[in-house]
Length: 194
Image (cartoon, rainbow, N blue to C red; front, side, top):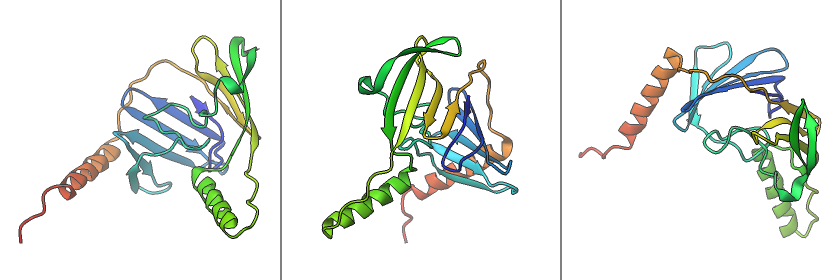
């Protein structure tokens, strides 16, 4: 699946998924690749031009840029509903359901900052800032119910689907993940007696 346009404005995002592992590779405008392995509710990110790995709780999905793979394979589609459905149209030779709306294009952190500023403004008797909105359109395959194209403002995401694949963690990612989980288990253990 190719996913174009995220918070770092990559030119291309490639996502390969099997049942329990997701590999996400984002290429930014300078051509640099950023790799993230999603497994067991964790995101293991390779630091570009380094052997270092960063492990975080896997989160996302509350904005148009990030995907929470435990909830969905697609980000930014929570606005799809009967109210935003506008009809059926052919796209890439397929019958597609078309949805249109106006959405907030900001990453979740910036949406929260915007809401906080508006709350402060209201408390001080000032007018809140207008919420940022961009037009959104989604082409969802009528038969499979999966997206073929989604556009948020000027950012477009086109999706391509290939055959099922077997995915295994690279040894360095598996080793770091195992060490991280062991450390978390140790920290969650009983407190030693003094």
